[in-house]
Every structure is written in structure tokens, then in C-alpha cells.
Image 1 (cartoon, rainbow, N blue to C red):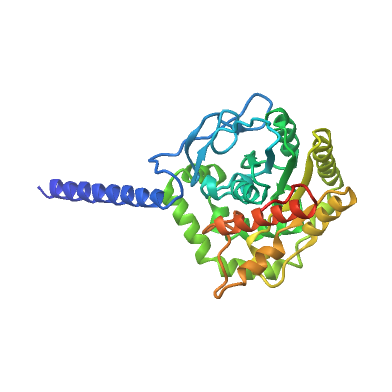
Image 2: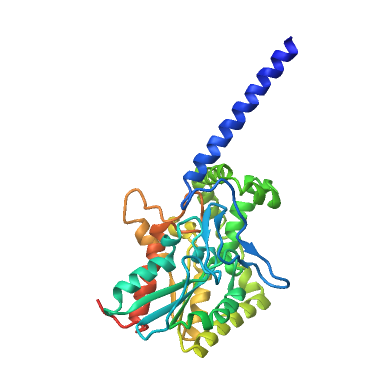
Length: 351
């Protein structure tokens, strides 16, 4: 009788635990942007001997983000230009920060830019922005994306959003030391296991909470290590040469399409909120662009000014995420790209 009673209690406890975890999973998923889904669905395919690409006409959640792609693999509703003279088409290229990881499609910078551009154009003209951002991409893939979407978009403007993890640099190396070094819980969990756990909304919430709780500690470590991390990018001459070749290939592709071309660089959260931060990667990319006559925007100063416009400082990044801007951060990006387009005469100012 005692064994049966114990088994009954254990069964009830297990059932209560399962129900509690299930409820917590549902709540965590409800808190994520976009439609609710009980499960994650993988949004990518990998063609033979090629990079991963979005599934076409896909709708589903993956790693905290609601994916909806059109028949071309672009994020959002079907991109169907008419190529009328009144249509101004933009190709937005980049990684997850352009795709808009962890925010709704309407909040990512390409869609915010589309709305701002539409309001700025002369009456009767229409803005269309193709969001060709793909999570995990870097400059090598950006070249292919631009060339692969030439006929579909026929862009008048191509905007490439670089991220600091696109190429070796001191800021990237510092971040990896702080967040993936010894003693960090993230480093203690094997990569494959993290990927499997990442399919759980509850795990994603706990992961974000862990970062928030250790944010000040990580910032302090970043400042302390800033002078000790070497600039890997400048030491690796072969990698630097490849990055230059990629940038020049993008600019040449834009020239062949008779499209304007500009580049910007997303900041890391530490660059926005720390008083002392590394600028070598920004200076390097800016120099490459200036030498080639490519308009360049560093978003750091704009983010820093916006963050300090309120007390306490304004949040401009997704909760528990040191890379990806939140809707307010993406709004800064969209406005700065519009400002550049106006300053350079890429668009005819209307309203």
C-alpha cells in the first residue's frame, strides 16, 4: 500500500510538473511577437553545395521570430513590383538584423524604411522595399543576394546592413571572450544542445533573463578586457582581402544595375551603452567605403544619442539580446537611411 501511495504521489507530482511547464511554455510563446504557435518550424533549406535559404511561402515560428516569406523567399507579403515609373524599389540586404530577428515583420528596418520613404516621395509615387535579409549571412552571401534579386527587384537603391559579426574585428573578438569564454553558462552548454533547447519558448525566455541578470557584469568585463583583445581582422590579411573583394563586388553589381548603393553598420549593445567602446571596426569599414566612393553610415552615434535621450536610458535592443535592435532601434536605422538617401539625392523629395 505504501508503494502504491508513493507511486500515486509521484505520478501526481509529475503531472503537475508537466502541466506547469506546458503552461509556462504557452505563456512564453504568447509573449513573443507575431501569431501564436505551439511548435517551432525550421524556415530554411540548404540546396546542394549552396548556402541556406528561406523556404518559399513559409509561415511559422523559429527561435522567437515569426517567419512569413513570399514565393521568392523574401520576408513579408508577396513582393510583386509593376516597374511603373512611379514605383521606387529598394533592395535591403543583410543578416538577421536586416531580416528582423525577434520583431514583427512590420517593425524590421526595411518595412519601417518603406513607410518613411513612401511618405517622403512626391505624391503619386510608391515605395517598395524587398527585405532580403537572412539569418547568419555575411558579405560573401550579400553579393549573391544582390545578383540573385536583380531581375525580381530591379532596384533603384541597394542598402546593405553590415553587422559586426560579419567580419573579424576587435569588437567581435571582445564580445566572444565575454559571452562565450570560460565560466560563462552559455559556453558550458554544447552548441547542438543549445540549438535544440532554443526551440522552446520557455528556454528562450530563461536565456534572455539570464542575460538581463548578468548584463552589468558582462559590461564591466567588456570594459576591463577592451585593451587586451587584438584586432583579428587586421592580422588576417587574406580575410581582409576577401572582405574588400566582396564589398567591391557588391558596388559593381549595383553599378551594373544602375542602382544607387550605400552601406551601414549596426552597433553592438555594448557600443551604445558603455562610455568607452572600440571604434576600430567602424573606422575600418568606413575607410574602405570612403576610398571607393560608397556612402557609409555608422549607426553608433545615433543609437547612443537616442539611448541617452531618456532617464533611465532607452532600451534599443531586444530583451536579453546584445545584437538585434527592438522596434525603436530599427526606427533609428530606417530614419538614418532615409536621411542619407535624401542627402545624396537618391530620392526626389516630395512631402
